[in-house]
Amino acid sequence: MNPNRKPILAGNWKMNKTSSEARDLAAKLAPLVSGVKDREIVLAPTFTSLQTVSEVIKGTNMVLAAQNMHWEDKGAFTGEISAEMLLDLGCEYVIIGHSERRQYFGETDDTVNRKAKQALKKGLSAILCVGETLAEREAGKLNEVISRQVTVGLKDIVTEYIKKIVIAYEPVWAIGTGKTATPEQANEVHSLIRQKVKTLYNAEVAQGLRIQYGGSVTPENVSALMAKPDIDGALVGGASLKPDTFATLVNFK
Ligand code: PGA
Image (cartoon, rainbow, N blue to C red; front, top):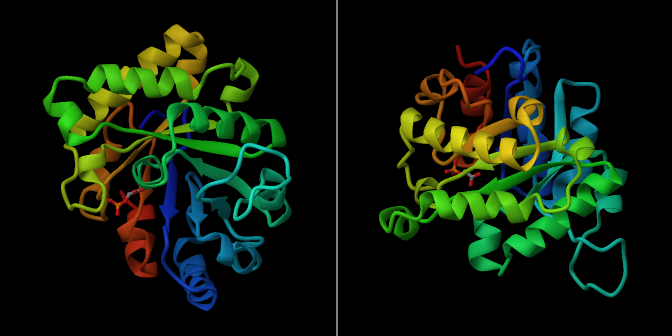
Protein backbone atom coordinates (compact mmCIF):
# COMPACT_ATOMS: atom_id res chain seq x y z
CA MET A 1 0.00 0.00 0.00
CA ASN A 2 1.05 3.51 -0.69
CA PRO A 3 -0.58 6.38 1.26
CA ASN A 4 -1.06 8.33 -1.96
CA ARG A 5 -3.27 5.67 -3.50
CA LYS A 6 -6.65 4.80 -1.99
CA PRO A 7 -6.99 1.03 -1.59
CA ILE A 8 -9.72 -0.51 -3.73
CA LEU A 9 -11.41 -3.76 -2.72
CA ALA A 10 -13.78 -5.18 -5.30
CA GLY A 11 -16.05 -8.19 -5.16
CA ASN A 12 -16.56 -9.91 -8.50
CA TRP A 13 -19.62 -12.07 -7.99
CA LYS A 14 -19.21 -13.67 -11.44
CA MET A 15 -22.23 -15.82 -12.48
CA ASN A 16 -23.51 -16.23 -8.94
CA LYS A 17 -26.60 -15.03 -7.05
CA THR A 18 -30.11 -14.46 -8.28
CA SER A 19 -31.40 -10.96 -7.96
CA SER A 20 -32.99 -11.64 -4.57
CA GLU A 21 -29.85 -13.37 -3.29
CA ALA A 22 -27.79 -10.43 -4.49
CA ARG A 23 -30.09 -8.02 -2.65
CA ASP A 24 -29.64 -10.05 0.50
CA LEU A 25 -25.84 -10.16 0.17
CA ALA A 26 -25.53 -6.42 -0.40
CA ALA A 27 -27.93 -5.62 2.44
CA LYS A 28 -26.04 -7.84 4.89
CA LEU A 29 -22.71 -6.42 3.78
CA ALA A 30 -23.66 -2.75 4.16
CA PRO A 31 -23.62 -2.51 7.98
CA LEU A 32 -20.53 -4.71 8.21
CA VAL A 33 -18.42 -2.32 6.16
CA SER A 34 -20.10 0.99 6.98
CA GLY A 35 -17.17 2.06 9.16
CA VAL A 36 -14.65 1.76 6.34
CA LYS A 37 -13.65 5.25 5.29
CA ASP A 38 -10.20 5.14 3.79
CA ARG A 39 -10.89 2.39 1.24
CA GLU A 40 -13.04 2.11 -1.83
CA ILE A 41 -15.46 -0.83 -1.87
CA VAL A 42 -16.82 -2.00 -5.21
CA LEU A 43 -19.47 -4.66 -5.85
CA ALA A 44 -19.78 -6.33 -9.25
CA PRO A 45 -22.95 -8.42 -9.41
CA THR A 46 -24.38 -9.93 -12.59
CA PHE A 47 -26.21 -7.66 -15.05
CA THR A 48 -29.54 -8.98 -13.80
CA SER A 49 -28.80 -7.85 -10.24
CA LEU A 50 -27.36 -4.41 -10.98
CA GLN A 51 -30.63 -2.56 -10.48
CA THR A 52 -31.38 -4.29 -7.19
CA VAL A 53 -27.90 -3.92 -5.76
CA SER A 54 -27.80 -0.32 -6.92
CA GLU A 55 -30.91 0.42 -4.83
CA VAL A 56 -29.54 -1.35 -1.77
CA ILE A 57 -26.15 0.37 -1.77
CA LYS A 58 -27.39 3.86 -2.55
CA GLY A 59 -26.06 6.22 0.11
CA THR A 60 -23.60 3.65 1.49
CA ASN A 61 -19.84 3.59 1.08
CA MET A 62 -20.04 0.92 -1.62
CA VAL A 63 -20.16 1.55 -5.35
CA LEU A 64 -21.44 -0.52 -8.23
CA ALA A 65 -19.56 -2.22 -11.06
CA ALA A 66 -20.57 -4.35 -14.01
CA GLN A 67 -18.57 -7.38 -15.05
CA ASN A 68 -18.47 -6.60 -18.77
CA MET A 69 -19.87 -4.30 -21.47
CA HIS A 70 -19.84 -3.76 -25.22
CA TRP A 71 -17.73 -1.19 -27.03
CA GLU A 72 -20.47 0.24 -29.25
CA ASP A 73 -23.01 2.85 -28.18
CA LYS A 74 -26.04 0.81 -29.21
CA GLY A 75 -27.48 -1.23 -32.04
CA ALA A 76 -27.88 -4.76 -33.33
CA PHE A 77 -25.70 -6.62 -30.83
CA THR A 78 -28.01 -9.23 -29.37
CA GLY A 79 -27.25 -10.09 -25.79
CA GLU A 80 -24.87 -7.19 -25.23
CA ILE A 81 -25.00 -4.29 -22.78
CA SER A 82 -23.81 -0.74 -23.40
CA ALA A 83 -21.95 1.70 -21.17
CA GLU A 84 -24.95 3.98 -21.12
CA MET A 85 -27.14 1.18 -19.80
CA LEU A 86 -24.68 0.59 -16.99
CA LEU A 87 -24.49 4.26 -16.10
CA ASP A 88 -28.25 4.43 -16.07
CA LEU A 89 -28.32 1.76 -13.36
CA GLY A 90 -25.77 3.59 -11.24
CA CYS A 91 -22.58 1.78 -12.21
CA GLU A 92 -19.36 3.66 -11.60
CA TYR A 93 -17.02 0.88 -12.65
CA VAL A 94 -16.88 -1.87 -15.21
CA ILE A 95 -14.54 -4.86 -15.17
CA ILE A 96 -12.92 -5.28 -18.57
CA GLY A 97 -11.04 -8.26 -19.97
CA HIS A 98 -11.33 -10.61 -17.03
CA SER A 99 -9.36 -13.76 -17.82
CA GLU A 100 -12.58 -15.78 -17.88
CA ARG A 101 -13.83 -13.50 -20.65
CA ARG A 102 -10.55 -13.92 -22.50
CA GLN A 103 -10.48 -17.71 -21.95
CA TYR A 104 -14.11 -18.67 -22.58
CA PHE A 105 -15.57 -15.84 -24.64
CA GLY A 106 -12.83 -15.02 -27.08
CA GLU A 107 -11.88 -11.59 -25.78
CA THR A 108 -8.58 -10.31 -27.05
CA ASP A 109 -6.30 -7.44 -26.14
CA ASP A 110 -7.92 -5.54 -28.97
CA THR A 111 -11.52 -5.99 -27.75
CA VAL A 112 -10.35 -5.22 -24.22
CA ASN A 113 -8.88 -1.96 -25.51
CA ARG A 114 -12.06 -1.05 -27.40
CA LYS A 115 -14.18 -1.69 -24.33
CA ALA A 116 -11.86 0.25 -22.04
CA LYS A 117 -11.88 3.26 -24.39
CA GLN A 118 -15.65 3.22 -24.64
CA ALA A 119 -16.10 2.87 -20.87
CA LEU A 120 -13.85 5.86 -20.19
CA LYS A 121 -15.36 7.96 -22.94
CA LYS A 122 -18.81 7.40 -21.47
CA GLY A 123 -17.71 8.23 -17.93
CA LEU A 124 -17.24 4.83 -16.34
CA SER A 125 -14.08 3.84 -14.53
CA ALA A 126 -12.54 0.64 -15.83
CA ILE A 127 -10.93 -2.23 -13.97
CA LEU A 128 -8.72 -3.62 -16.69
CA CYS A 129 -7.60 -7.19 -16.03
CA VAL A 130 -4.31 -8.70 -17.09
CA GLY A 131 -2.56 -11.91 -16.13
CA GLU A 132 -0.53 -14.79 -17.44
CA THR A 133 -1.43 -18.46 -17.64
CA LEU A 134 0.67 -21.08 -15.89
CA ALA A 135 2.06 -22.26 -19.24
CA GLU A 136 3.12 -18.70 -20.10
CA ARG A 137 4.79 -18.23 -16.72
CA GLU A 138 6.58 -21.56 -16.97
CA ALA A 139 7.76 -20.73 -20.49
CA GLY A 140 9.40 -17.55 -19.16
CA LYS A 141 6.90 -15.33 -20.97
CA LEU A 142 5.54 -13.48 -17.94
CA ASN A 143 7.04 -10.08 -18.78
CA GLU A 144 6.19 -10.35 -22.45
CA VAL A 145 2.55 -11.28 -21.83
CA ILE A 146 1.92 -8.65 -19.16
CA SER A 147 3.67 -5.93 -21.18
CA ARG A 148 1.61 -6.77 -24.24
CA GLN A 149 -1.68 -6.88 -22.35
CA VAL A 150 -0.96 -3.52 -20.70
CA THR A 151 0.34 -1.84 -23.85
CA VAL A 152 -2.47 -2.98 -26.15
CA GLY A 153 -5.12 -2.65 -23.43
CA LEU A 154 -4.19 1.01 -22.91
CA LYS A 155 -3.59 1.86 -26.58
CA ASP A 156 -4.85 5.35 -27.51
CA ILE A 157 -6.07 6.02 -23.99
CA VAL A 158 -5.04 9.56 -23.21
CA THR A 159 -3.38 10.61 -19.94
CA GLU A 160 -6.49 12.45 -18.81
CA TYR A 161 -8.46 9.18 -18.82
CA ILE A 162 -5.83 7.06 -17.15
CA LYS A 163 -6.90 8.36 -13.74
CA LYS A 164 -10.11 6.39 -14.23
CA ILE A 165 -8.31 3.13 -14.85
CA VAL A 166 -7.48 0.51 -12.28
CA ILE A 167 -5.38 -2.41 -13.47
CA ALA A 168 -6.10 -5.79 -11.92
CA TYR A 169 -3.25 -8.25 -12.05
CA GLU A 170 -4.80 -11.70 -11.93
CA PRO A 171 -2.53 -14.62 -12.70
CA VAL A 172 -4.82 -17.11 -14.39
CA TRP A 173 -3.34 -20.00 -12.39
CA ALA A 174 -4.37 -18.32 -9.13
CA ILE A 175 -8.02 -17.67 -9.95
CA GLY A 176 -10.44 -19.90 -8.09
CA THR A 177 -7.70 -22.43 -7.46
CA GLY A 178 -6.77 -21.59 -3.89
CA LYS A 179 -3.21 -20.97 -5.17
CA THR A 180 -2.49 -17.34 -4.41
CA ALA A 181 0.58 -15.70 -5.83
CA THR A 182 2.91 -14.93 -2.95
CA PRO A 183 2.94 -11.25 -1.98
CA GLU A 184 6.46 -11.09 -3.47
CA GLN A 185 5.37 -12.63 -6.78
CA ALA A 186 2.39 -10.30 -7.00
CA ASN A 187 4.37 -7.21 -6.08
CA GLU A 188 7.01 -8.04 -8.66
CA VAL A 189 4.42 -8.08 -11.44
CA HIS A 190 2.72 -4.96 -10.07
CA SER A 191 5.97 -3.04 -10.25
CA LEU A 192 6.52 -4.37 -13.75
CA ILE A 193 3.09 -3.00 -14.71
CA ARG A 194 3.85 0.34 -13.05
CA GLN A 195 7.15 0.51 -14.90
CA LYS A 196 5.40 -0.23 -18.20
CA VAL A 197 2.83 2.49 -17.53
CA LYS A 198 5.67 4.88 -16.78
CA THR A 199 7.21 4.24 -20.18
CA LEU A 200 3.82 4.54 -21.90
CA TYR A 201 2.84 7.73 -20.03
CA ASN A 202 5.03 9.28 -17.35
CA ALA A 203 6.18 8.86 -13.76
CA GLU A 204 3.28 10.79 -12.29
CA VAL A 205 0.68 8.67 -14.06
CA ALA A 206 2.51 5.49 -13.02
CA GLN A 207 2.69 6.60 -9.39
CA GLY A 208 -0.99 7.46 -9.31
CA LEU A 209 -2.18 4.23 -10.94
CA ARG A 210 -3.92 1.76 -8.67
CA ILE A 211 -3.11 -1.88 -9.28
CA GLN A 212 -5.23 -4.58 -7.66
CA TYR A 213 -4.20 -8.15 -7.17
CA GLY A 214 -6.72 -10.91 -7.85
CA GLY A 215 -6.61 -14.68 -7.51
CA SER A 216 -7.72 -16.56 -4.40
CA VAL A 217 -7.59 -13.52 -2.11
CA THR A 218 -9.04 -14.36 1.31
CA PRO A 219 -9.31 -12.67 4.71
CA GLU A 220 -6.26 -14.75 5.67
CA ASN A 221 -3.88 -13.57 2.96
CA VAL A 222 -5.13 -10.04 2.19
CA SER A 223 -3.01 -8.23 4.80
CA ALA A 224 0.26 -9.72 3.58
CA LEU A 225 -0.63 -8.81 0.00
CA MET A 226 -1.71 -5.29 0.89
CA ALA A 227 1.50 -4.74 2.87
CA LYS A 228 3.44 -4.69 -0.39
CA PRO A 229 4.26 -1.25 -1.80
CA ASP A 230 2.83 -1.76 -5.28
CA ILE A 231 -0.37 -3.59 -4.30
CA ASP A 232 -3.25 -1.15 -4.03
CA GLY A 233 -6.23 -3.42 -3.70
CA ALA A 234 -7.83 -6.75 -4.40
CA LEU A 235 -10.26 -8.13 -6.94
CA VAL A 236 -12.01 -10.90 -5.09
CA GLY A 237 -14.12 -13.72 -6.50
CA GLY A 238 -15.02 -16.60 -4.20
CA ALA A 239 -14.39 -14.75 -0.95
CA SER A 240 -16.77 -11.94 -1.96
CA LEU A 241 -19.85 -14.16 -2.00
CA LYS A 242 -20.39 -14.31 1.75
CA PRO A 243 -21.04 -11.06 3.61
CA ASP A 244 -19.01 -11.94 6.71
CA THR A 245 -16.02 -13.14 4.72
CA PHE A 246 -15.94 -10.17 2.37
CA ALA A 247 -16.46 -7.74 5.25
CA THR A 248 -13.54 -9.27 7.16
CA LEU A 249 -11.42 -9.00 4.02
CA VAL A 250 -12.36 -5.36 3.44
CA ASN A 251 -11.64 -4.53 7.08
CA PHE A 252 -8.14 -6.05 6.88
CA LYS A 253 -5.57 -4.62 9.28
P1 PGA B 1 -11.08 -15.80 -6.97
O1 PGA B 1 -11.41 -14.95 -8.28
O2 PGA B 1 -10.92 -14.82 -5.84
O3 PGA B 1 -12.25 -16.70 -6.78
O4 PGA B 1 -9.81 -16.54 -7.23
C1 PGA B 1 -10.76 -13.74 -8.51
C2 PGA B 1 -11.22 -13.15 -9.82
O5 PGA B 1 -11.37 -13.90 -10.80
O6 PGA B 1 -11.45 -11.93 -9.92
